[in-house]
Length: 130
Image 1: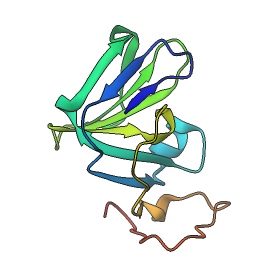
Image 2: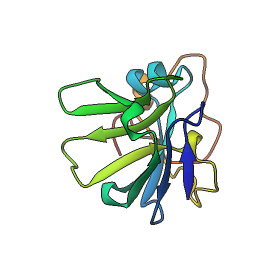
Image 3: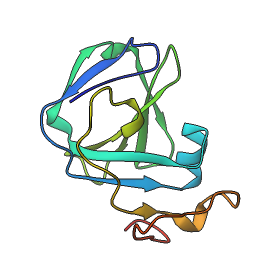
Image 4: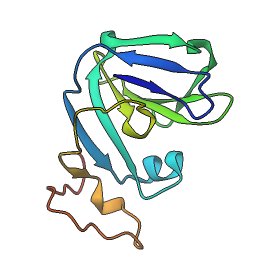
C-alpha cells in the first residue's frame, strides 16, 4: 500500500496489512487534522518504507509520550507515534493513495468529540481509548 502527503514530497509504502483502524475524536487529533477527528490505521513501524522525503517530516510532541509526524512543506498530518507502543505506528488513512484494505472498527475518545458532529454509524464507541 502506498501513501503520500498533500504536496507529494513525502511518499511511503507499507509492506504489510494494517493491524487495526479507528477514528479518534480527541482534541489533539481534531486540531492536528482540522476536522471532526482522524482515522488511523495501525501497522508495524518496521513495515513502513519511506520512499521519498523522509527528511521533510517534522515531529511534534503533542504530549510527553506522543509524537505526530507531518510534512514540513504542506503541513499534512502523516502519522501518530506513541512511545508506549514502540513497535507500532498509526498512519492517517487519509494520506493513503491506494486502498488501505481496512475500515475503522471503532470510535475512540468520543468524550472529546465536537458538539457539532454526530456519530451516525454502528461502530463501537469508547469514551477514551478502546
